[in-house]
Amino acid sequence: MSRKVKSAEFKHDTISYYTQGEGQSIVLIHGFLESAEMWFEYANELAKTHYVIMPNLPGHGNTACFGYDHSMELMGDSVIAILKAENKRKAIVVGHSMGGYVAMAMADKHPDVLKGLCLYHSTAKSDSAERKNGRLQAIKLVQQNHKSFIRISIPLLFRPKYRIPYRQEINKLKRAALLMPKQGIIAALQGMRERPNREIIFKFPPYPVLLIGGKHDHLIPFNDLKIQASLSENVQAIRLKEAGHMSFVEEKENALNWIVRWLKHRET
Image (spheres, rainbow, N blue to C red):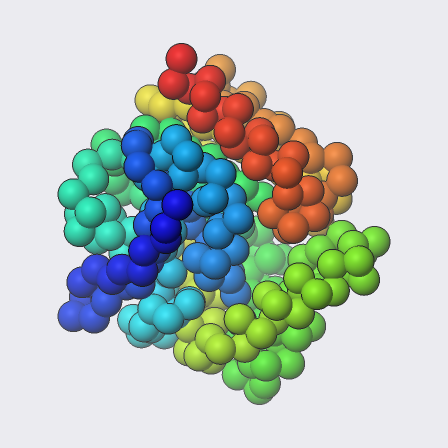
């Protein structure tokens, strides 16, 4: 099934994205230091039943930067611009890590667009004071040497036992991230730092919500996801027993199977 490369107008520039398949629309949003390419293997399966849309967020992939602060709302608006270009009124949205923060911004600002929401190693919570300070420290490191920041940061996203077995995949992610402009990295860090807490959305979600976390994910503790899932019967949390933060590599088939099962269940 062929994958198409497209672009949509956004704020006097363009957002790049890919599409694949046919059927009900599903948007797959990548995370920080990633690009739409992270989803290609998943898209090959999901495109059998869905029209898959994979954006490159502002400052990522080959999409331009839009200033020095890419708020989650701005990134969400860029996805909305793609949906409008595609003449799609509603979609299921899946977001990995920062992509989940973008999805939550969409759920907050454009609630009528979502038909389902999956936070994939992500959370509705805002950054803690400690995490916000960590973002500031990260910005300083990026300003000093953004390539060194990338080389150090990406392996740390993986469970330690997988850093050597998946060295090839880690190096591929590094090479892609090293193409990012320094401005895009800083703008994303600033946007994540400023995002508000959106847990209230899970109290009365008008669509099914799936939270996927890793037992060994030190960035998104699974206990936080369990608490968020308890806010509504419409929210479900799934723990992947072997994964850290990057289960699309670490526990690829199992994570994909959970997404596929969720999609089938929500359509019945």
